[in-house]
Image: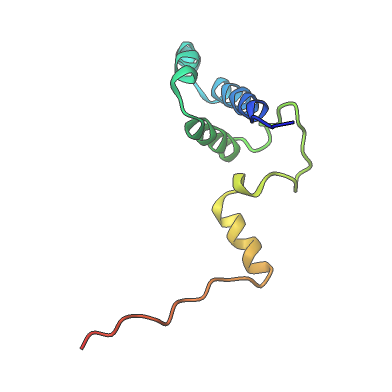
Length: 101
């Protein structure tokens, strides 16, 4: 069986539409469907990230997750950096800078 990714796309669409319904003012909600028809998947994922930052407890659609089980790509950057530093992992500065003479 070949996975086409359609289920994932539908899940992103549902989450994005629910996020826009929560984030937008009532008088602008008529613009959601036209925007959804023209937006790329990256733009929709950006709306999901915005919703997670604005209301982290509200975006729990059809797949409830325990507090520590959100995908790491959806965590704010500072949380990812904190996880790396607490695990003792860090990036080192390169010592190969070119010398001008």
